[in-house]
Amino acid sequence: MKKITIILLIMVGFLVSCTKNFEDFNTDKKRAVEVPGQFLFANAQKALADMYSSTSVNINNWKLFAQYWTETTYTDESNYDVLNRNIGNTLFRIYYRDILNDLKEARRLVELEAADGDEATIAKANKLFIIDLVEVYAYHQLVDIFGDVPYSEALNIENISPVYDDAFTIYKDLLIRAKAAADGLNPAAGSFGADDLMMGGDVAMWKKFANTLIVKMGVAISTVDAGLSKSYVEGAYAGAFGFGEACSFQFLSGANSNPLFQDLIQSGRHDFVPANTIVDMMNGKEDPRREKYFDINGDVYNGGIYGETNPFAQFSHINPRIEEETYAAVMLDYTELAFYLAEAAERGYSVGGDAATWYTNGIRSSMEYWEVPTADADAYLARADVAYATATGNWKQKIGTQAWLAFYVRGLEGWTSYRRLDFPVLNLPPAPDESAEGAVPRRHTYPVNEQTLNKDNNAAAASKIGGDKLSTKIFWDE
Image (cartoon, rainbow, N blue to C red; front, side):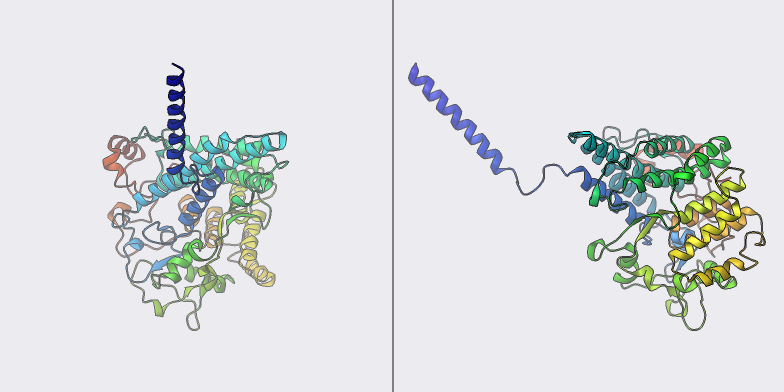
């Protein structure tokens, strides 16, 4: 019996040893079993900045829809054809898979992190608030692009057919979440440090980001719920960005270069020129930002006719600064804030200044960003067609025109500002897609894939918003 026991122990030991050796053999010790949360967070930031910056017609058409740029040879997208390249599918894939899903997983991993001591506990909480803020920012862009989108049931692998939530309901929840982050972030401890590719882990700046984002979303809902809008804007503006402050994503060289460099230089293609819509307006106002926005061709700034074929050599080109590998993407800044607060002042909100003051601050902030000399900025603001007291039109035209000019390069913001305020007047291309119903698009159509993979919910959403068309308005577009 003793011999049998000894033999059994030897066999068990052998089996345990073999199992351990087998597991060691099949484990790649050089590769992490699970990616750390901060890396997924950084990856989501990069994907968001890439999407926001890109001018590839395979990814988004924002700079074209805003009529900052137009195409030279292939004019489908300038004429609002979004189906040829199935851009809606790309937008959903990047936002939900590459951005929001990475943020969800980053949150899960950060929640699992040990936090020993008060400072570590605060830092962990800061990380979770910051993840939430980037998620809020991404969802608010999705709503501004499509209207109703999957939200409450999104990102659940066990539910491949999520419902589409009401856009205004999503906005209200995003505002609650942004407010919680603005209140909860604590600069007494750190956050992601260098793994935060937008703010470098600066918690105080993330608090300002949160409050600026609240103002942005709060102003957007002013046409739907003025009381709620006023409450959020008045409660947040004092804690928002100051002059010269911004949230930016600093691109590097090589594989991590700015998508504009990849699209405009590295590709070796000449697919875009500045559109006559913006060039003609800036010429008319002798805007000193022209030389910062465009590369003059000959003796005059000459924009391509929007939506038509435009030989590259015959028109002004995009300024080389914008085409640099390391050109940073501005995600949210004081310039935006100032124009939103000018609008808020016109709507009767108490925001620490009148509309003229905030309007002027917005223009000055833009001039400083583009390195326009102060004397030139002063001369521009003194013009009768620029000064707030004498510029043409009502406040929507004054603010809308100057905000649109200042948002150059940031196509989604320019297009959204136009849709919200209906200024400036944009040109109609020669052959607009029938889904646009003879007008500049008011939203983007849903992905074609959703009509098959999530048929019932997609159909219900399309019906609710008034039809899955480019001409259908977002809830705040009144």
